[in-house]
Image 1: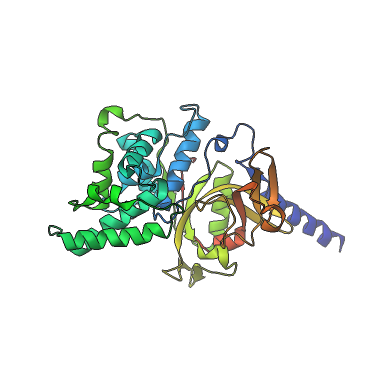
Image 2: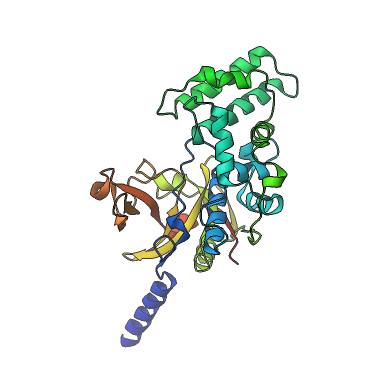
Length: 352
């Protein structure tokens, strides 16, 4: 009996050691102090939002810049062929390493100049342009777009943007610039940025090439890989977002010694893993998402790390009931390690 108890406690200690606390958000002099939580706001380039954050983290950590320099639109543009949503985390990081970077302020300035005081900027503007270009390409199918196609594309983009905007958009100031455009979204964004992001204006940073880790043979393999990688640094990963609202969701199943997707419509998404800790008897991963700084349906029942907007005080394991006053930002949320291991598709890292 005594031997059994000794072995039990040794086993429990080993499990606890496997889930030792790691937190890249709150550590001293963390680059995340300068990298705001992203809000993709309907833009389907989550892979570029997370890739740009990982690149910014490394560049700030190695003192190559004092402010974030990677813009998600630029990262997506460099890794996509026809539409911005066709890229992925690995190609995004390595493409920027190869092509060079157009500074964040230059990209943002060019996009805001295009909006021409229309009250449409940031993520809603990107979403509008992407929707417009994709609609036009779908209708034209390689032919020259006519006026009817252009108007249809504009209406689709306006309806999409209206649903994501808090301000009234002054469309008449924006639409004339698209009246004769027939381009893929990559061509459109390339044209919009060409004056601000000329080859002479690009800069390069010393950033390791990214690697993808996949496939995972079992759920245990996925778990151990997450533990190994988080001990080296933050990483980004693709997974089924359905797991946020359904803790029992199994996006990837282990059957017949194969690890395969169960549901093709599981809401494939990209986020950033920034830590790990034990809560009660279970190990949790700390995830920095790209859906804004507040509580939503996806994290209403999660424990998160929050921060006071004025005092900058960190609050760990906060919930909406405790801190949903509007005075706090939600910086990252915990999700069960076992839960995530059933839904992770790939891990992309520059820390090997």
